[in-house]
Image 1 (cartoon, rainbow, N blue to C red):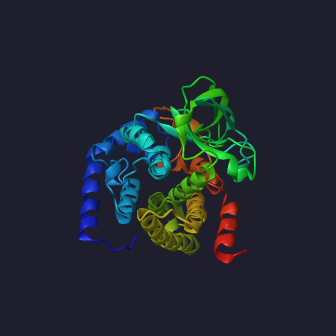
Image 2 (cartoon, rainbow, N blue to C red; image 1 turned 180 degrees about the horizontal axis):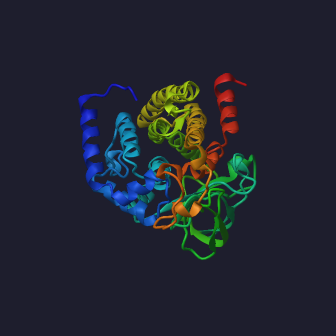
Image 3 (tube, rainbow, N blue to C red; image 1 turned 90 degrees about the horizontal axis):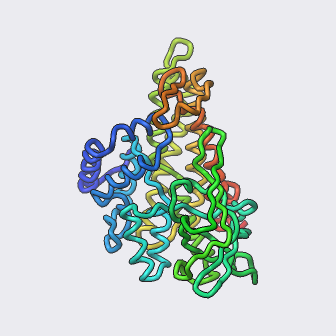
Length: 398
């Protein structure tokens, strides 16, 4: 990105680059570069390394144990870690639940849960979507009935990312059927080790199983695990989703994916010339690069507003739509650039420690699985069709 940075920001960039050279494990960066699947231990090792510098949740305010990064530092962190092939920080704890607790949690909840998020003692997943309640999230049916000092939770969540690793889940649950459906929802913190919880993997089209079904049968959850007030969870849900949608844009990821696409297009030939010299293909790359530059600028504006205590508004929907479009188009062009090498789809080659190797150059192995997997981007976090409706109603009055 052709942005102007202050001396302090450039010093931060150089410090971060030195850290990545010294502390990013090579076996992890190599798996990221090749598009291989990461283990829970890979994520935990990287999170622990970041926390040595207080960078695991660097965007958190200093009063809660973060580094108080400004928006430009957050942008630089995402950009440089993506360039170095570092894993993206798993967002459910530090990027989603953390801000929710800071804004809506009680003093006791903040004191208990925030330090555990920073230390990595707890691994969180997100219990929002259900069968029949995806984009229409307010139609959720998982219930939490009050029984003395506990809620009794029954129901099902689906598409729960990395639930197989999680020991806690933050859930939207129905605590009342009175009034509008949005008015009877509460936000509850649940221990995944409690009796009555079952996790079932969902195998995706790329052969991976990063998402799951989570079933609840008479799960007893202490009342003190309610965040905010009972039946006021929809406000919290919307606040969290704006942060999630901004994060989905993935400016740093897109920047590295664009650089990787250019590298591949320089190595693959068509009609005796590098694909990068083909006018039509080069025009597609240029169009995406322009879109990415515009998105990066918008992302900085939104993150700046969030740093001042303002929840991202309709801009988060704009970023979600445009960011997912760019990422999917980058995946598509990368697959096309790999040509016939992208045809063999060897899912086993992406498993960590696998001795199976896909035919062709190493950069081609993940091209088709990456394309398949990221078809989900325009659906999760609120489908792009719904985001366009939000934009139209908010900005156009449609």
